[in-house]
Image: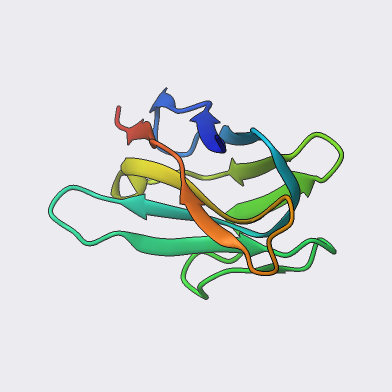
Length: 121
């Protein structure tokens, strides 16, 4: 059974930083694109970062410069470094990944359970 588990959320003051981690575990052969999404109160879930296996990243223009994603393929981990956090960054942050199960020709998409980030003074 494949699982994605996020960690690193918490309460931070405006202007502060947090680093989220996403750990993939289970029986699979490889991980393709990994992404981060968030759901703020009263809003739909939104995409905030993606990283492919080679390390190439992509972000919505509104977040570029404050959020940085990275990954460690050897550890099956992804990270989201968030700097200069603002109250509007408050929400539940989810990890997403396309994972190739052993013997499968196509990837299966998985979600983590989410980690809460609250930006408040």
